[in-house]
Length: 465
Image 1 (cartoon, rainbow, N blue to C red):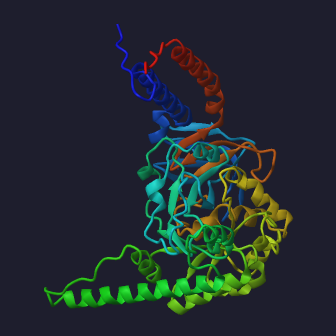
Image 2 (tube, rainbow, N blue to C red):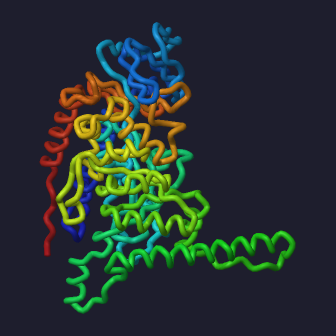
Image 3 (spheres, helix red, strand yellow):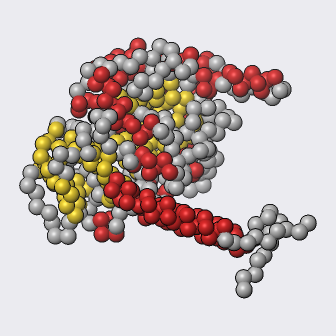
């Protein structure tokens, strides 16, 4: 006989255990549906007779690709599968590098620490959710790497996280090994927060500084002045400590440490921006303090200052065709990407959206329409150029021998609206397989029905007041 223990919040212990068990079973089943068999995790895969879009070395027709030990081991025709390898016939299909999204907020629903103007001490990696269903959906769209950024409520926001979408694994395994760390900056109206600031003033709450673009520039100068002084104090201490064992180190400052890394070129700056004037302001401040802005994010007016961005050695990550959704975006044009690329700016197309991330291949195709990019140039905006912007181009972004086996098999040209991803590999492992997904759907429906029926059959003892 089962003893039912009642709780003050109205659930029986048996029902609680059933619900927890159902949740665990559901998650396990979902993970099983999305993960490869044990053999393919550690195994070798030979993809035969595909059209291989290398991105950096052109299109290879009727070509084989050998994935081994997590790397691209061989590229060529008539390759022989090693013993125990899985062979995939990709005749009539396309293979391309995994898509890289340089601006994402997936896996994180706490993205803005908006209480201060400078929150460089907070880290997105601390709030990543490895069970976010958007990971799986993006894998189904051929995405393998994302740059998870802090929000744009702060002039200097929090530290980013570069993630490989290894759905079903823990966060530590998903973090991109060896990737340079980054940090989010933001300019413009998202920082000044005029609407919310006015509401705060009406209720008697103090305004948060800054409320103008002038104030944003001062916040940047103040922060990097303090970081430069902090670095000098530590440099002085480290020099003294070599001979003076009584030297006292400066007090550690978690806000300034990431900014010192920026000054030292050890942390990349990714800056939310829209207008040409504010982008120029940031580039000038960076030049004054001796660091480089790695990417201007969004940068919808980048085409107006394309030469200046190129001269600064800065990249830009933008939308394909989104504009006029707020005043800052009124001067956006769909030719932004093409103009920037033709001026020598490393340019990418990003999603900034859980949903658009699944269709970045189509956003890349639009760049052939708006500006006449070649197929390889368009593909670079969602692969290789993103790897450059994140400092991981030696690992991912193109199909080359020795690079990580982050590749996707498509049932047609990935720049066509009629094509879809069939299999997505990360480090040589299958993390999305369309056939497996379809096969598991009926089983999942039956399992859910069984769990719901079991729960309905439980009698809950009512609480007696």
